[in-house]
Image 1: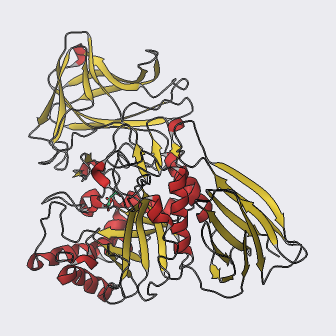
Image 2: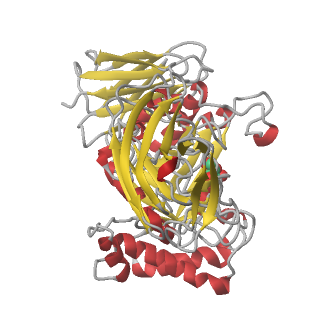
Image 3: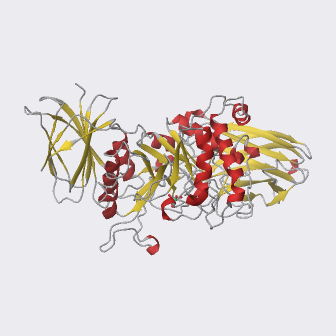
Length: 626
Ligand code: AHR
């Protein structure tokens, strides 16, 4: 049994404790949170991923070809799809979507496309099921298109009912007789309803899944994806602004082209819609292939970071503040946290990062924004701390044995340099003899978060909570995985085109519970011995309740708890919520293994709350406010 008392005065915690880390990996942006349904909508390409016609197919014997016309749609989107010939009366093309299209009877879809060339007639756009062969929605657009001009057309439709699955295509058809010469198409777009009804917006079910985590922080846009694989590419925020016609896209670092439809403004709206504070990651001049910008050439990139901050926060009288207003957002998006680079090994001798790189960014940003928390990327929780008053970003991918042993991990960490736990996850199952991940030795890597891994992560998070005066917050990584193309497992939330298949992992449930029961002041506890139970106590200024969060890990039997509080009287009532699941189990489509148990516990005449937590469980006791 575990018996302890909760005292009266402790440390204030960071209000930001839990958040989301986002980068476009596993098709988490395009084909994920970004709600665009057409894949390869603008034939974007570059030296790394040349333009192609992937995901597009001809109909009626038409020929499809990529063309760089002398009069392109825009400088950013120079390549279009040309439709020629055809052996049938009706010709056209179809798109595979991001591995299918969701068809829902109560959704209204908004579509658009650009056309160039001689055409006179109607273009029909239809959502068609491969499973039933039925057309669920269609729109007919009368098009008179003139020779050398690009014209945009828009359409809306609402399906007659739900399709049985997402094995559907989007078809564009037209009478061959209306085609008077080569016809060119570009920026073909189709959006379902989006979160908060935002144009060019985000997928509702995934936003709701994130909202369920009650996140306060939002780290963007990487991870690796901020960095670029090789020169000259990096996540260049200026190329992600404004009309989609002006966005060339970016060869993301995870093996596929990013459209950049999800750009800096969309990130800010995302943060705003979920009430999260951005942690803006900026590029430090280092590429993943080892190339770097020399010191003598770095200043323009430092200036670029200042431009980015001015764009986000500057008054509309500043050049970049005016640009933000011109895009329709006169109110600034305040930024309090900025991270320089990603995993640039500050504490490991890290290349040129420590020598001059971090310094140049730090000094320039601090000179203009003295209150900004500047985060140095990736350093170990060891004797070496970030320079000046900088914070640090610590990443940990671990096995359960390792994660579960870190309950004291941050106890001796200095409180002079706040720490952000910008990426963490249990990624492999334990195997005897190994206390850390074996990475590429393959077989042990978990496809999905699994319950005892999630419980071990909870111990790590309690270690952050008990030091929550030093720790800015924690974010699981990666956050998302499309089942159809992924580069990294496990991930917090998994999905495909059909929102009914979205899976909230075991770690999602664990984080949701810990994040939605925030402690604003940690309180000391006396008595009790850690292992196999771990706990943290505190109170919430928001709800007025006293809180104990407890984890039972690697125990052969349920653990009884006897908890008293200096400030809670006999007869007080509390709600106990705990999560448990079979030790090795993972959540998969249609199968949620996590059991939530809720009960009322009353303090006995000695003011003691008695409850039990099963082996491998995460629980929270919240005393009703007096
Ligand atoms: O989260 C996946 C990757 O892990 C991130 O891109 C990188 O920062 C880390 O190495």
